[in-house]
Length: 247
Image (cartoon, rainbow, N blue to C red):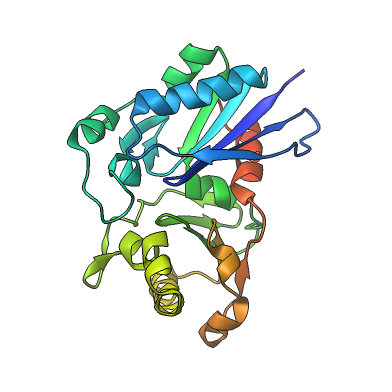
């Protein structure tokens, strides 16, 4: 019997959920993410959950850039307190080129898949027809692009500049907590910008802060904006582990 564990790593919280062979959702749990989060800490957290659930497959959504299971940019995991806060240089260095997939597989004995968390979210949304942009709003901003059901490789944009601030600082949780009204306006502006940059026909908004938005706020864009109310990243991770090879 296959027991798969989906682990969605965010800069604020880590969420996990086991799936059986039938693909049915089990109860999802969460815990706070350490700030900053050293790779050894994250591996220990994931390994503990894998062993607790007796999982033999684990699929991990990572909130930064990942190539073939190797971390190339830890994004906000290396910051001492989220977007805009100082980077812990020792933690950032530890993440550089860290083989997360291989390390988790060796530590747990489970087959492992590691993808960007926005890619995991896109895999859990309906992106079968046309060009879709999937953005995640949480501690920072995540972006994934899909065309006719195929996930396309794009770089994480959260740390890039949008005016005087980064995308993460513009629409991340700190900005929302400081001024929710300005935050909504900023989200609309960022989505309008990304729509033009990626030339998409549908936009999906997911992540912890998606629940604070409504499609009416984007009506002037004249394209569908779908607010994903559930946690599509966990569903997407389960789908991806069936479609992609694991270590």
